[in-house]
Amino acid sequence: MAGSLKQSPLHDRHEALGAKFAEFGGWSMPLEYATGVVKEHTAVRESVGVFDVSHLGKAMVSGPGAVDFVNATLSNDLAKIRPGKAQYTLCLDESGGIVDDLIAYWHDDEHVLLIPNAANTAEVVRRLQAEAPEGVKVVDHHDDYAVLALQGTRSDDVLDKVGLPSGHEYMSFVEADFAVGADTVGVVVCRTGYTGERGYELVVANEAAGELWDRLMAAGEEWGITACGLGARDTLRTEMGYPLHGQDISLDTNPVEAGLSWAVGWKKDAFWGRDAVLRAKEEGPRRRLRGLVAVGRGIPRPGMGVTLTHDVPLADITSGTFSPTLKKGIGLALIPTMVAEDAQVGVDVRGRREIFQLVKPPFVDPSVREA
Image (tube, rainbow, N blue to C red):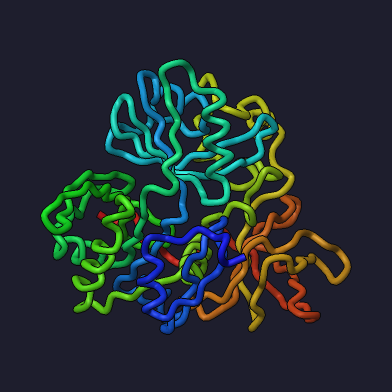
């Protein structure tokens, strides 16, 4: 199996750091390093960490009408932003189910870069290619570019030291030159991330990824920069209540019940799944993605049952982990809306009924939007 998985262009760097690898969307990616998930998580919350997220998809929609095409297919409304900005959006099917959640980077009138989840890239590209009008091309660049996520309070300092732009507004991006030997390559520096902390995602050609990683690690040494695996990325995003496709959201989940109505352009004339999502909004959700915080010492894991009383099943945990920040178990689940928002529920943790408090995420205060 390991031999059939794709590898990041930074795979040798991860091996040298003693990474433990796991499969993510067909890629062999670092789960954690010798430092461990908790220390990696804490480095991001308190200073700075760097993640290799090159398994994320990259697809360019280009040509006359590219922006209008993206706006007529994906859920959010590009009219809310402008070139140089990024937007969280959804690819929906005709029933309103979530094919994928992704970020759209609006470069100019004829170019929109999409960053889907690794496992869903081929399907998102397939759907877009099938509907693209004449003159609009959808090209899958999944294997051509690396993505590095520099996250944490010291991320601006690290970028400044490397000579890359920093300080631009949240959900915006800047294209910059990066010297690799005698050559110069382009890097897209995006004020985005999946941790809830101030940070940036850097999109760079594969051949320059190693040099960029090395320079970031060297520049961040004085602030204790830490290489972080996807285990810490999961605990960080769970603390924010950010949904993970394939667990918290899926084809069986619509944006209304997932709490993602803000990522829908309700006034747009067209987007995939529009009629179904409008019906879901009008009817109101029967369940809603909610947060759970342990009252005791229980740590929830995906698939564990949630009950209102000992014999009234409600749902299953979709995401669950130990929060290094709160020092408690936290989780997400699609809870029926008939249950009071502040109710206490039970979670079957290895045969014991542990009590959890329903809450509205995020579980910790984010700093991602700080100027």
